[in-house]
Image (cartoon, rainbow, N blue to C red; front, top):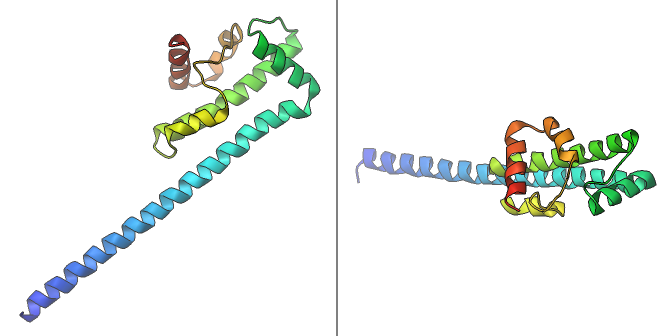
Length: 147
């Protein structure tokens, strides 16, 4: 083997080794990104539910709204339950976007404990839908119509 052929083989081996290293680094970074996104999701979901658990009035409102999506509320109660609905839906939207970007797997949407096709927001949806981004609103409305 001539000197130039040896250099070519060594050069190719160096490039191949570098590509393997870069591939491993990208994989590790992807795993770290997914783990961080999953951690953030868990924290955000916990905060929404913990808020209701720590406030007996909000817990009662949540229970009433889940049992009867068309229940009547005072203006103050309506504001509380609407804020909770918006917060929960915003957290769902963050995860939905991460799924669409390929950061998280689609199955994590089920980790919320509810499915948008099963959630009945009743008349409240018309009052809060404007707080959702258009593409996410379309997703939710499409899921609702598929019930």
